[in-house]
Length: 292
Image (cartoon, rainbow, N blue to C red; front, side, top):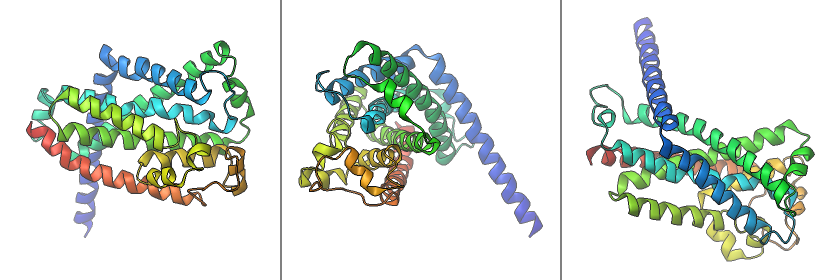
């Protein structure tokens, strides 16, 4: 029994070491490639500006304070494009082809890869924060700075970051799934762009929760969109709906609107469910990716 426990500990330790090596290799690849910064800085900046323009009716109306942190979601969704770019580029690499020789399993690779992508996502979030801070000075309807000053509860910050990271993990697994299934990078990125805009619209980002909740059909479609669950987790945290559910009416204008989630655990459970599904398919798709 003692030897079994020791062997199990050694297996876990070796697995952790392999994942750490993948993490280091991925991080080095990400931050030493000029192309990476196009996906981590330029594209998120463009998407942030588009989202800001849509939310403010092209800078004619102020944005609801409780919706400000949703501005970070579109840059995070761009991680789908980034993931596909990295994996497609690696199809020709010796590292991918020699994974079996290194005894790195699909699970080892994906866990190490997702950790590196989380670091990249945090970098993108920091850049997005800077864009929005600058836009706060140059766009008259952007009150982003006052929203920052209005945050008084540390749990709000943790809740917002947690929701953003869940969205990043989902985006990574979606990127792995698409890249593993298809062969042509132009087809892959075109589909990724369509997915990003579909999730931004029906995930209550471009189309605000107030607008989507007023149309039952749109709300129902949203249940099949992973992003909606991350968005509502963030809204729960930012509006402190875990303290008082009726804070939902800070960003929903009518009591007749359809509210998709009544409790905090519902969007959390939905998020975890989609993560499990996308992770499972990612393992299968990554096998296809290695064979190509």
